[in-house]
Length: 211
Image (cartoon, rainbow, N blue to C red; front, side, top):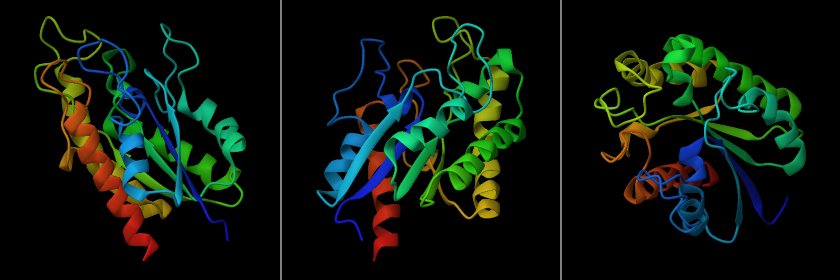
């Protein structure tokens, strides 16, 4: 048994730590993976794989190379062996251009989970995280024009779809919206308090399974 356990955090701009005010990226100690590292301690190695704009399976014509399904297998190969993979995707899938339902997005997530379970050796534990909800004002002028009111509705529905998917695939499940919310600044990204709350929830999940 390895003395240090490896945890891969795979996600989008909220895993990356993009600041709601658009001024760049939070420092590692403020980002949720950094707080997860601090909370779990030296017996764990947190590996960050957050990329702004990343989707599950949808191809963004404005941003190439953002499909999580394309990147997950080489990512796993780069970081093996892994004990856990924390996957938090779905916010970008809610963009108007994709016209995706919550079930469509869950199907994309199912494809990523299948890749993890089939391609990683040894197979790591998976924590499936449904992302925070988009803010109700995001469709208003001044916020992100790639989202509309339908996007907000879909984001609200993701938790239940992911909960069912986690049960079907033997994954752990965490609803990020139960402990964190989008900053009122941009209606989309975690602020520093949100990163801390999410990290503590994820750390609690991991610790409970290590007892």
